[in-house]
Amino acid sequence: MDIFLSILALIFFFVFFSISKRLLQSHKNLPPSPPSLPILGHLHLLKKPLHRSLSTLSNRYGPILSLRFGSRPVLVISSASLAEECLSKNDIIFANRPRLLAGKHIGYNYSAIGFASYSPHWRNLRRIATVEILSSNRIQMFSAVRIQEVRSLVKDLFRDSESGKSVVELKSKFSELTFNVMMGMIAGKRYYGDNVVDLKEAKWFREIVKEAMVLSEASNFGDFVPVLGWMDLGGVEKRMVRMAKDRNELFQALINEHQRKKKKVDFSSSMEVEIDEEKKKKKKTFIDVLLSLQETEPEYYTDQIIKGLLSALLAAGTDTSALTTEWAMSLLLNHPDVLEKAKVELDMHVGPRLLDESDLAKLPYLHCIINETLRLYPVAPLLVPHESSEESIVGGFNVARGTMLLVNVWAIHRDPELWEDPTDFKPERFQGPQIAKESLKLIPFGHGRRACPGASLAVRMVGLALGTLIQCFEWERVGEEKIDMTEGPGLTMPKAQPLKAVYKPRHTMFNLLSQL
Image 1 (cartoon, rainbow, N blue to C red):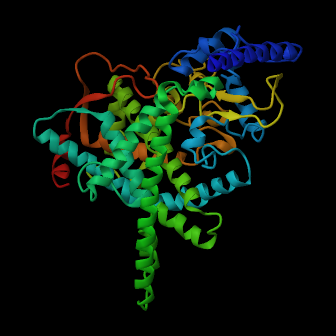
Image 2: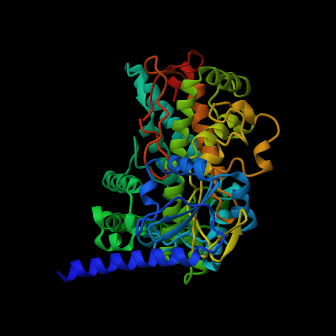
């Protein structure tokens, strides 16, 4: 009975608070807002996928919206000019992150780079990410890992085609590829396919990844209606805590393993007269780089800071690249004329050898395909949420401190005022001068201080994988119907139906593939 009365009192409190706040703010110059409900705010208007639901509201009320997700104020932006106001003019003001439950448990209590608000700590993490981990030089040092994994995928596909398997489900193939690439760079390990050294550890890793994928699709209403958070409806928080614990233990085990190896290498090196420093650098993983920093500043570069950076790399650099490659292949299968043009470009500039990363600069049409894929199907359709640190003015309207910002990149990329035939797949629109750089017309990786520092790595990974698959195989749809391009639920906009395709080795590449 006491619990029931407490919940009832809380409901009355939130109703009173909501009505009072609305009355107090009625005189302010706020952005347009649809009618809302007590406690829920505008949550009842939202449907999956969220970017489409918000786009529908923007079409009705305008490109700037003031919403309430429960007790949380939200600003939704759906135009390039307004995005520029938020991410350029007011970049610092909107450089914070909202304190959501995922940041507490998965983001190491809001200390990881993706969840930390703008502060000296975050600026230092950003510097580490851009200078020490994701610099052009560091990315280039790991090109062999990416090439090896892409060729391993091609080898597997060729082997399966020889045994009569001509239909492949590509979603899982791309996912395994990107996880092997990222873990190869992070720890020098692969957890999928052949040559997996520790099968038990690989199984553990796969279980963590599987649970993380499920949680990324789960809705946590406790982030917006606190009373539901205390009740943990659906057990989302409980599962999040368990997954974070397992992931933390795995990363700690990898750190400990690298520390032990480093001690052995340092001891061996001290016994040698001459050391090949260049060879040592090339063998360094991201963990090795971060442990070297830990030696210089152990009080700052704690194991927790390192694990936070590793988790960010794994989360941001895997599913996103895999999905972009899957969307790109889906678009190419629906547009065989574009696929043929890409094939001709590869034959002309690469010839009868396997594509290398150094060839990507000579393949402008392939880059057009990637840009057009990112335009139509950005894997972060609402970007990662921002939050305002102080009051500001956007589009002539007042925006309160503590407002969560959602930039509907999906809507901006399909704006008919910015793009001709916005829903059509036309890679040619990116040929010639980069018109997208004139304004924030194309921002799949965000913009400003919070832009994704791994954009260059992602484009290389997608370009290498997509280009190699086009170069090595003939691709067709399964059946005559076009590929279903419906989006599924989730933060990274997966396809509702995993991509399946018919393939066979290209005649000109057969001998080369048989030698892999």
